[in-house]
Image (cartoon, rainbow over all chains, first blue to last red; front, side):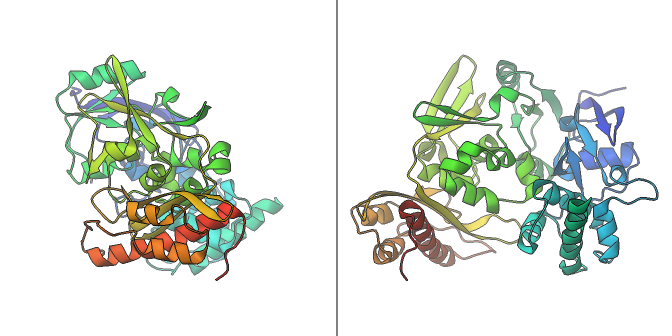
Length: 161
Length: 291
Protein backbone atom coordinates (compact mmCIF):
# COMPACT_ATOMS: atom_id res chain seq x y z
CA UNK A 1 0.00 0.00 0.00
CA UNK A 2 1.75 3.19 -1.15
CA UNK A 3 1.93 5.95 1.43
CA UNK A 4 1.72 9.71 0.85
CA UNK A 5 5.47 9.88 1.10
CA UNK A 6 6.12 7.26 -1.61
CA UNK A 7 7.05 8.22 -5.15
CA UNK A 8 7.25 6.35 -8.40
CA UNK A 9 10.73 6.74 -9.88
CA UNK A 10 11.45 5.86 -13.50
CA UNK A 11 14.97 6.33 -14.78
CA UNK A 12 17.57 4.81 -17.07
CA UNK A 13 20.56 3.13 -15.46
CA UNK A 14 23.43 1.92 -17.62
CA UNK A 15 21.16 2.00 -20.66
CA UNK A 16 18.27 0.06 -19.10
CA UNK A 17 15.10 1.75 -17.99
CA UNK A 18 13.64 0.79 -14.65
CA UNK A 19 10.81 1.85 -12.39
CA UNK A 20 10.34 1.43 -8.64
CA UNK A 21 8.01 2.73 -5.95
CA UNK A 22 10.17 4.06 -3.11
CA UNK A 23 9.87 6.43 -0.15
CA UNK A 24 10.55 9.98 -1.35
CA UNK A 25 13.50 10.26 1.00
CA UNK A 26 15.36 7.49 -0.87
CA UNK A 27 18.73 8.75 -2.04
CA UNK A 28 19.97 7.82 -5.48
CA UNK A 29 22.85 5.80 -4.03
CA UNK A 30 20.44 3.64 -2.01
CA UNK A 31 18.15 3.27 -5.02
CA UNK A 32 21.06 1.97 -7.08
CA UNK A 33 22.39 -0.36 -4.40
CA UNK A 34 19.22 -1.66 -2.76
CA UNK A 35 16.59 -1.48 -5.49
CA UNK A 36 18.80 -2.37 -8.46
CA UNK A 37 21.56 -4.36 -6.73
CA UNK A 38 24.28 -2.19 -8.27
CA UNK A 39 26.60 -2.24 -5.29
CA UNK A 40 29.65 -0.95 -7.15
CA UNK A 41 28.59 2.55 -6.13
CA UNK A 42 29.75 2.91 -2.53
CA UNK A 43 28.54 4.88 0.46
CA UNK A 44 31.54 6.41 2.20
CA UNK A 45 31.07 9.53 4.28
CA UNK A 46 27.42 10.07 3.34
CA UNK A 47 27.99 13.80 3.82
CA UNK A 48 28.89 14.96 0.28
CA UNK A 49 32.60 14.98 0.96
CA UNK A 50 34.27 11.67 0.04
CA UNK A 51 32.95 11.02 -3.48
CA UNK A 52 32.79 7.19 -3.15
CA UNK A 53 29.19 7.41 -4.41
CA UNK A 54 30.06 9.31 -7.60
CA UNK A 55 27.98 8.35 -10.65
CA UNK A 56 27.25 10.15 -13.91
CA UNK A 57 23.84 11.80 -14.25
CA UNK A 58 23.10 12.71 -17.87
CA UNK A 59 26.82 12.23 -18.46
CA UNK A 60 28.06 14.48 -15.64
CA UNK A 61 29.66 13.24 -12.41
CA UNK A 62 27.53 13.83 -9.30
CA UNK A 63 27.48 12.52 -5.73
CA UNK A 64 24.61 10.05 -5.57
CA UNK A 65 24.33 10.38 -1.76
CA UNK A 66 23.26 13.98 -2.36
CA UNK A 67 20.66 13.41 -5.06
CA UNK A 68 17.18 12.06 -4.32
CA UNK A 69 16.19 9.09 -6.44
CA UNK A 70 13.09 11.15 -7.24
CA UNK A 71 15.27 13.98 -8.60
CA UNK A 72 16.93 11.48 -10.92
CA UNK A 73 13.55 10.47 -12.36
CA UNK A 74 13.59 10.83 -16.15
CA UNK A 75 17.38 11.10 -16.22
CA UNK A 76 20.14 8.78 -17.37
CA UNK A 77 22.48 7.37 -14.75
CA UNK A 78 25.78 5.63 -15.45
CA UNK A 79 27.44 3.71 -12.64
CA UNK A 80 30.82 2.00 -12.40
CA UNK A 81 29.10 -1.18 -13.66
CA UNK A 82 28.16 0.63 -16.85
CA UNK A 83 31.47 1.96 -18.12
CA UNK A 84 33.54 -1.10 -19.11
CA UNK A 85 32.74 -4.36 -20.86
CA UNK A 86 33.03 -7.82 -19.43
CA UNK A 87 36.66 -8.72 -20.00
CA UNK A 88 37.58 -5.27 -21.31
CA UNK A 89 38.09 -2.53 -18.77
CA UNK A 90 37.34 1.13 -19.45
CA UNK A 91 40.66 2.98 -20.06
CA UNK A 92 40.35 4.71 -16.67
CA UNK A 93 39.76 1.37 -14.91
CA UNK A 94 42.70 -0.11 -16.80
CA UNK A 95 44.95 2.78 -15.75
CA UNK A 96 43.99 2.35 -12.06
CA UNK A 97 44.98 -1.32 -12.38
CA UNK A 98 48.19 -0.65 -14.32
CA UNK A 99 49.36 2.22 -12.10
CA UNK A 100 48.26 0.55 -8.87
CA UNK A 101 45.94 3.48 -8.17
CA UNK A 102 44.27 1.76 -5.22
CA UNK A 103 44.91 -0.18 -2.08
CA UNK A 104 41.69 -1.17 -0.30
CA UNK A 105 39.61 -0.14 -3.31
CA UNK A 106 36.71 1.36 -1.40
CA UNK A 107 37.03 4.81 -2.98
CA UNK A 108 37.95 3.44 -6.41
CA UNK A 109 34.54 3.35 -8.13
CA UNK A 110 34.02 7.00 -7.22
CA UNK A 111 37.59 7.88 -8.16
CA UNK A 112 37.15 6.26 -11.58
CA UNK A 113 33.88 8.08 -12.21
CA UNK A 114 35.46 11.39 -11.11
CA UNK A 115 38.54 10.87 -13.28
CA UNK A 116 36.28 10.13 -16.27
CA UNK A 117 34.75 13.57 -15.73
CA UNK A 118 38.12 15.30 -15.38
CA UNK A 119 39.26 13.80 -18.70
CA UNK A 120 35.94 14.51 -20.42
CA UNK A 121 36.28 18.19 -19.46
CA UNK A 122 39.99 18.38 -20.22
CA UNK A 123 41.55 15.60 -22.32
CA UNK A 124 45.07 16.75 -21.47
CA UNK A 125 45.07 17.59 -17.75
CA UNK A 126 48.18 18.47 -15.78
CA UNK A 127 49.06 16.89 -12.45
CA UNK A 128 47.61 20.01 -10.77
CA UNK A 129 44.40 19.81 -12.84
CA UNK A 130 43.88 16.22 -11.70
CA UNK A 131 44.51 17.07 -8.05
CA UNK A 132 42.09 20.00 -8.20
CA UNK A 133 39.59 17.83 -10.07
CA UNK A 134 39.73 15.22 -7.31
CA UNK A 135 38.91 17.76 -4.57
CA UNK A 136 35.63 15.92 -4.04
CA UNK A 137 37.09 12.43 -3.66
CA UNK A 138 38.85 11.15 -0.57
CA UNK A 139 41.23 8.17 -0.44
CA UNK A 140 42.54 7.10 2.97
CA UNK A 141 45.12 4.56 1.68
CA UNK A 142 47.16 5.69 -1.25
CA UNK A 143 48.22 9.26 -0.55
CA UNK A 144 46.80 9.98 -4.05
CA UNK A 145 50.15 9.65 -5.83
CA UNK A 146 49.19 6.60 -7.88
CA UNK A 147 45.64 7.81 -8.37
CA UNK A 148 46.98 10.94 -10.03
CA UNK A 149 49.40 8.80 -12.06
CA UNK A 150 46.48 6.61 -13.15
CA UNK A 151 44.43 9.63 -14.19
CA UNK A 152 47.30 11.02 -16.27
CA UNK A 153 47.96 7.61 -17.84
CA UNK A 154 44.26 7.20 -18.65
CA UNK A 155 44.12 10.64 -20.23
CA UNK A 156 47.17 9.83 -22.36
CA UNK A 157 45.69 6.48 -23.43
CA UNK A 158 42.36 8.07 -24.29
CA UNK A 159 44.03 10.81 -26.35
CA UNK A 160 45.84 8.16 -28.39
CA UNK A 161 42.81 5.99 -29.05
CA UNK B 1 21.86 8.29 6.46
CA UNK B 2 18.71 9.67 4.90
CA UNK B 3 16.26 12.49 5.50
CA UNK B 4 13.11 12.19 7.58
CA UNK B 5 10.01 11.32 5.55
CA UNK B 6 8.54 14.09 3.43
CA UNK B 7 6.10 14.47 0.57
CA UNK B 8 7.92 15.00 -2.74
CA UNK B 9 6.23 17.42 -5.12
CA UNK B 10 7.69 18.03 -8.55
CA UNK B 11 6.91 21.47 -9.96
CA UNK B 12 6.20 21.63 -13.68
CA UNK B 13 6.49 25.42 -13.96
CA UNK B 14 7.17 28.45 -11.79
CA UNK B 15 3.44 29.20 -11.22
CA UNK B 16 2.93 25.53 -10.32
CA UNK B 17 5.85 25.70 -7.86
CA UNK B 18 4.42 28.84 -6.26
CA UNK B 19 1.02 27.16 -5.91
CA UNK B 20 2.58 24.08 -4.30
CA UNK B 21 4.56 26.31 -1.97
CA UNK B 22 1.49 28.32 -0.98
CA UNK B 23 -0.49 25.14 -0.21
CA UNK B 24 1.80 23.78 2.46
CA UNK B 25 2.71 24.73 5.98
CA UNK B 26 6.27 23.56 6.16
CA UNK B 27 7.56 23.28 2.61
CA UNK B 28 11.13 23.57 1.37
CA UNK B 29 12.19 24.41 -2.18
CA UNK B 30 14.67 21.91 -3.64
CA UNK B 31 16.90 23.06 -6.49
CA UNK B 32 20.23 21.21 -6.82
CA UNK B 33 19.99 19.97 -3.25
CA UNK B 34 23.69 20.31 -2.47
CA UNK B 35 22.99 22.31 0.69
CA UNK B 36 19.41 21.30 1.52
CA UNK B 37 19.84 17.52 1.29
CA UNK B 38 22.86 17.42 3.64
CA UNK B 39 20.88 19.54 6.11
CA UNK B 40 17.89 17.21 5.82
CA UNK B 41 20.11 14.16 6.34
CA UNK B 42 21.39 15.73 9.56
CA UNK B 43 17.80 16.63 10.53
CA UNK B 44 18.78 20.29 10.63
CA UNK B 45 15.89 20.68 8.19
CA UNK B 46 12.80 18.48 8.56
CA UNK B 47 10.26 19.80 6.05
CA UNK B 48 6.84 18.20 5.74
CA UNK B 49 7.04 18.55 1.94
CA UNK B 50 9.67 19.36 -0.65
CA UNK B 51 8.93 21.16 -3.90
CA UNK B 52 11.47 20.14 -6.53
CA UNK B 53 11.96 23.04 -8.94
CA UNK B 54 14.89 21.33 -10.68
CA UNK B 55 12.91 20.61 -13.82
CA UNK B 56 11.87 24.22 -14.50
CA UNK B 57 14.32 24.79 -17.33
CA UNK B 58 13.34 28.43 -17.92
CA UNK B 59 14.92 29.28 -14.56
CA UNK B 60 18.38 28.23 -15.81
CA UNK B 61 20.82 30.08 -18.02
CA UNK B 62 22.80 33.29 -18.41
CA UNK B 63 21.40 36.06 -20.60
CA UNK B 64 22.44 39.66 -21.25
CA UNK B 65 19.59 42.13 -20.88
CA UNK B 66 20.48 45.76 -21.50
CA UNK B 67 22.75 46.99 -18.73
CA UNK B 68 22.32 43.81 -16.66
CA UNK B 69 23.32 40.18 -17.05
CA UNK B 70 20.63 37.86 -15.77
CA UNK B 71 21.60 34.56 -14.18
CA UNK B 72 18.67 32.19 -13.75
CA UNK B 73 18.39 30.81 -10.23
CA UNK B 74 18.75 27.22 -11.44
CA UNK B 75 21.99 27.90 -13.30
CA UNK B 76 24.49 25.41 -11.90
CA UNK B 77 28.00 26.37 -10.93
CA UNK B 78 29.18 24.05 -13.67
CA UNK B 79 27.05 25.83 -16.28
CA UNK B 80 28.30 29.19 -15.02
CA UNK B 81 31.88 27.96 -15.28
CA UNK B 82 31.33 27.03 -18.90
CA UNK B 83 29.48 30.19 -19.92
CA UNK B 84 31.38 32.38 -22.38
CA UNK B 85 29.87 35.66 -21.23
CA UNK B 86 30.78 34.93 -17.61
CA UNK B 87 34.31 33.92 -18.61
CA UNK B 88 34.76 37.08 -20.70
CA UNK B 89 33.41 39.69 -18.30
CA UNK B 90 33.45 38.30 -14.79
CA UNK B 91 36.95 36.99 -13.99
CA UNK B 92 36.25 37.15 -10.24
CA UNK B 93 33.36 34.74 -10.74
CA UNK B 94 35.67 32.45 -12.68
CA UNK B 95 38.17 32.65 -9.80
CA UNK B 96 35.49 31.65 -7.30
CA UNK B 97 33.96 28.88 -9.41
CA UNK B 98 37.37 27.23 -9.83
CA UNK B 99 37.82 26.85 -6.06
CA UNK B 100 34.21 26.40 -5.01
CA UNK B 101 33.29 22.98 -3.53
CA UNK B 102 34.26 20.19 -5.96
CA UNK B 103 33.37 19.18 -9.51
CA UNK B 104 30.50 16.91 -8.48
CA UNK B 105 28.89 19.54 -6.24
CA UNK B 106 29.38 22.21 -8.91
CA UNK B 107 27.47 19.98 -11.35
CA UNK B 108 24.32 20.14 -9.18
CA UNK B 109 24.61 23.23 -6.95
CA UNK B 110 22.81 26.32 -8.21
CA UNK B 111 23.35 30.06 -7.88
CA UNK B 112 19.82 30.62 -6.63
CA UNK B 113 20.19 27.85 -4.09
CA UNK B 114 23.42 29.37 -2.82
CA UNK B 115 21.82 32.76 -2.30
CA UNK B 116 18.59 31.39 -0.79
CA UNK B 117 20.54 29.14 1.61
CA UNK B 118 22.24 32.13 3.26
CA UNK B 119 25.39 30.30 4.29
CA UNK B 120 27.73 32.98 5.72
CA UNK B 121 30.74 31.06 4.36
CA UNK B 122 29.65 30.62 0.74
CA UNK B 123 32.10 31.79 -1.94
CA UNK B 124 29.89 33.28 -4.60
CA UNK B 125 28.03 35.87 -2.48
CA UNK B 126 31.30 37.78 -1.98
CA UNK B 127 31.72 38.03 -5.74
CA UNK B 128 28.07 38.88 -6.31
CA UNK B 129 28.14 41.57 -3.62
CA UNK B 130 31.29 43.14 -5.07
CA UNK B 131 29.56 43.13 -8.47
CA UNK B 132 26.47 44.86 -7.02
CA UNK B 133 24.12 41.94 -7.65
CA UNK B 134 20.39 41.97 -7.11
CA UNK B 135 18.07 39.08 -6.35
CA UNK B 136 14.68 38.63 -7.98
CA UNK B 137 12.10 36.80 -5.92
CA UNK B 138 8.70 35.53 -7.07
CA UNK B 139 5.58 34.87 -5.04
CA UNK B 140 2.05 34.13 -6.27
CA UNK B 141 1.04 37.14 -8.35
CA UNK B 142 4.09 39.25 -7.53
CA UNK B 143 7.80 39.57 -8.11
CA UNK B 144 10.26 41.86 -6.39
CA UNK B 145 13.94 42.66 -6.77
CA UNK B 146 16.22 43.26 -3.80
CA UNK B 147 19.88 44.27 -3.58
CA UNK B 148 21.92 41.22 -2.50
CA UNK B 149 23.33 43.20 0.43
CA UNK B 150 19.79 43.62 1.77
CA UNK B 151 18.73 40.08 0.89
CA UNK B 152 21.42 38.33 2.95
CA UNK B 153 20.57 38.95 6.60
CA UNK B 154 22.71 36.61 8.68
CA UNK B 155 23.59 32.99 9.36
CA UNK B 156 21.19 31.02 7.14
CA UNK B 157 18.88 34.02 7.34
CA UNK B 158 17.65 35.85 4.26
CA UNK B 159 14.90 38.21 3.19
CA UNK B 160 13.05 35.29 1.52
CA UNK B 161 9.49 35.08 2.86
CA UNK B 162 7.24 32.01 3.09
CA UNK B 163 5.82 31.24 -0.33
CA UNK B 164 8.62 32.95 -2.23
CA UNK B 165 11.19 31.51 -4.65
CA UNK B 166 14.45 33.10 -5.81
CA UNK B 167 14.17 33.18 -9.61
CA UNK B 168 17.13 35.21 -10.75
CA UNK B 169 20.34 36.95 -9.78
CA UNK B 170 21.46 39.86 -11.91
CA UNK B 171 24.70 41.79 -12.10
CA UNK B 172 25.75 44.88 -14.04
CA UNK B 173 26.68 44.05 -17.64
CA UNK B 174 29.77 46.27 -17.65
CA UNK B 175 31.64 45.47 -14.45
CA UNK B 176 35.15 46.83 -13.89
CA UNK B 177 37.68 44.49 -15.54
CA UNK B 178 39.87 44.77 -12.43
CA UNK B 179 38.27 42.04 -10.33
CA UNK B 180 39.55 39.04 -8.46
CA UNK B 181 38.50 36.59 -5.73
CA UNK B 182 40.85 35.00 -3.21
CA UNK B 183 40.02 32.50 -0.48
CA UNK B 184 41.54 30.44 2.28
CA UNK B 185 39.53 27.26 2.59
CA UNK B 186 38.62 24.89 5.37
CA UNK B 187 40.07 21.83 3.71
CA UNK B 188 37.33 19.29 4.50
CA UNK B 189 34.36 21.40 3.44
CA UNK B 190 36.19 23.63 0.92
CA UNK B 191 34.21 26.52 2.39
CA UNK B 192 36.18 29.74 2.89
CA UNK B 193 37.41 30.54 6.39
CA UNK B 194 37.77 33.87 4.64
CA UNK B 195 37.20 34.93 1.05
CA UNK B 196 37.61 38.38 -0.46
CA UNK B 197 36.44 39.76 -3.78
CA UNK B 198 37.81 43.06 -5.07
CA UNK B 199 36.49 45.02 -8.04
CA UNK B 200 38.49 48.10 -9.11
CA UNK B 201 38.14 50.78 -11.74
CA UNK B 202 41.40 52.49 -12.67
CA UNK B 203 41.91 55.57 -14.80
CA UNK B 204 45.22 57.38 -15.50
CA UNK B 205 47.02 55.59 -12.68
CA UNK B 206 44.34 56.42 -10.10
CA UNK B 207 41.82 54.05 -8.54
CA UNK B 208 38.51 55.73 -9.33
CA UNK B 209 36.23 53.28 -7.57
CA UNK B 210 36.49 50.10 -5.53
CA UNK B 211 34.14 47.52 -4.13
CA UNK B 212 35.50 44.94 -1.72
CA UNK B 213 33.37 42.14 -0.23
CA UNK B 214 34.32 39.63 2.44
CA UNK B 215 32.77 36.21 3.11
CA UNK B 216 33.36 33.53 5.72
CA UNK B 217 34.51 36.00 8.36
CA UNK B 218 31.27 37.31 9.88
CA UNK B 219 27.67 36.12 10.17
CA UNK B 220 26.98 37.48 6.71
CA UNK B 221 29.00 38.55 3.71
CA UNK B 222 29.84 42.25 4.04
CA UNK B 223 31.39 45.09 2.09
CA UNK B 224 34.54 46.51 3.58
CA UNK B 225 33.67 50.20 3.34
CA UNK B 226 36.87 51.31 5.09
CA UNK B 227 38.98 49.57 2.46
CA UNK B 228 36.81 50.96 -0.33
CA UNK B 229 37.11 54.54 0.99
CA UNK B 230 40.87 54.22 1.36
CA UNK B 231 41.18 53.04 -2.22
CA UNK B 232 38.95 55.63 -3.89
CA UNK B 233 41.20 58.28 -5.44
CA UNK B 234 44.41 56.54 -4.35
CA UNK B 235 47.29 55.97 -6.75
CA UNK B 236 47.06 52.56 -8.42
CA UNK B 237 50.17 51.15 -6.81
CA UNK B 238 51.07 48.45 -4.26
CA UNK B 239 51.43 50.83 -1.29
CA UNK B 240 47.77 51.95 -1.64
CA UNK B 241 46.62 48.34 -1.77
CA UNK B 242 48.67 47.40 1.27
CA UNK B 243 47.30 50.21 3.41
CA UNK B 244 43.68 49.72 2.38
CA UNK B 245 43.76 45.92 2.70
CA UNK B 246 44.82 46.33 6.33
CA UNK B 247 41.35 47.79 6.97
CA UNK B 248 39.42 44.92 5.34
CA UNK B 249 38.11 43.33 8.55
CA UNK B 250 37.78 46.47 10.66
CA UNK B 251 34.46 46.65 12.44
CA UNK B 252 33.53 43.06 11.59
CA UNK B 253 32.13 40.85 14.34
CA UNK B 254 34.03 37.71 13.40
CA UNK B 255 32.76 34.14 13.64
CA UNK B 256 34.78 31.86 15.85
CA UNK B 257 34.54 28.06 15.78
CA UNK B 258 36.59 24.86 15.89
CA UNK B 259 38.09 25.67 12.49
CA UNK B 260 39.36 29.19 13.14
CA UNK B 261 39.24 31.89 15.77
CA UNK B 262 37.73 35.27 15.03
CA UNK B 263 41.07 37.13 15.03
CA UNK B 264 42.56 34.51 12.66
CA UNK B 265 39.64 34.97 10.27
CA UNK B 266 40.17 38.76 10.38
CA UNK B 267 43.86 38.26 9.70
CA UNK B 268 43.04 36.06 6.71
CA UNK B 269 40.64 38.72 5.40
CA UNK B 270 43.41 41.34 5.46
CA UNK B 271 45.89 39.07 3.69
CA UNK B 272 43.37 37.91 1.12
CA UNK B 273 42.20 41.48 0.50
CA UNK B 274 45.78 42.43 -0.35
CA UNK B 275 46.09 39.48 -2.75
CA UNK B 276 42.70 40.06 -4.36
CA UNK B 277 43.42 43.78 -4.80
CA UNK B 278 46.82 43.06 -6.34
CA UNK B 279 45.34 40.62 -8.82
CA UNK B 280 42.41 42.93 -9.55
CA UNK B 281 44.82 45.79 -10.23
CA UNK B 282 46.88 43.60 -12.55
CA UNK B 283 43.75 42.75 -14.47
CA UNK B 284 42.62 46.39 -14.55
CA UNK B 285 45.87 47.70 -15.93
CA UNK B 286 47.20 44.68 -17.74
CA UNK B 287 50.48 45.20 -15.87
CA UNK B 288 52.13 43.20 -13.17
CA UNK B 289 52.73 45.61 -10.27
CA UNK B 290 56.37 46.02 -9.12
CA UNK B 291 57.09 44.34 -5.82
